Image 1 (tube, helix red, strand yellow):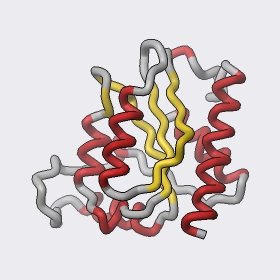
Image 2: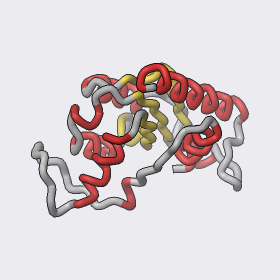
Image 3: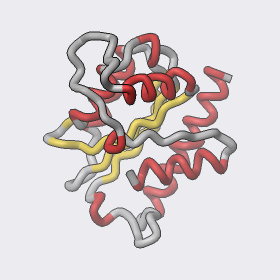
Image 4: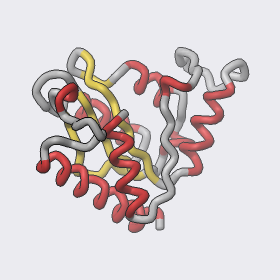
Length: 162
């Protein structure tokens, strides 16, 4: 969540209006392939936020070499109606060495629903040691990578959705 908050903060500095949805704070069902989940109002809250947004930043932990099941389930609860044409940036955090397994899988998922995934992405290895006590990156190169990521997301959103 720290990486997502940093990205949100930097997007706001560029003038973007940002809403962060924390899936830990939401009550979402397991996707059963249906489209209606009236007993879970957070499904509609999530769908509405995504539908109204011009761009998405999806941040996922990498578990067992892939995207988090929670993120995948949340995406499965949405359809092309919600995700088609969304400019999307992706961030992953993992405990081991930085790699792009989760990001590669997420890129395929988002392309499948016709989102526009920016080429820049951020993978944060050894996340347990990546942030200082104030929540900023310890590694300046990682901070610069996030800056480039945010700038690309902002500029591509203006071009594609502006």
